[in-house]
Image (cartoon, rainbow, N blue to C red):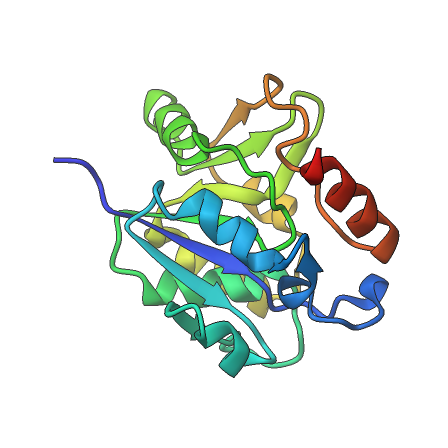
Length: 196
């Protein structure tokens, strides 16, 4: 039987470089940015969760479970991840940011294959050159380790996952898959690219 895989889309940040605009709700070619991410994930996972620390009613319009970080204070992506890990009943949790609208359509399958083949605790995506620390597949039992890391005042995802057995899956065959949007200028560049 195939494992159950849930996904959490991280939309809980402050988006300072976007002028404070909620990145998941920013329009990209006629759709909220998070819609592009949802469209890429909807056929890859069993359930989608959305981590948002503001504008929750707007995120709820897409019909998915929306939750805020259990720890207040905008503690970064790990805070959203640990909250999602504690909520899911799935065998695995896929984590992606809301500002990567060109995610691979085979993201989940390839991360799962890498994790299983290497008997790892988690699998992180790479663009062939750099690891993408907020694009990963992990086992829910890692919630305790992640919570302890946060409780110790740590925030860097890659420091946390180095404590575990990590598989790295290269998506060098899809070089633009992890292009993300942090500024209005990047948004405009990507909008032009998607429209082509």
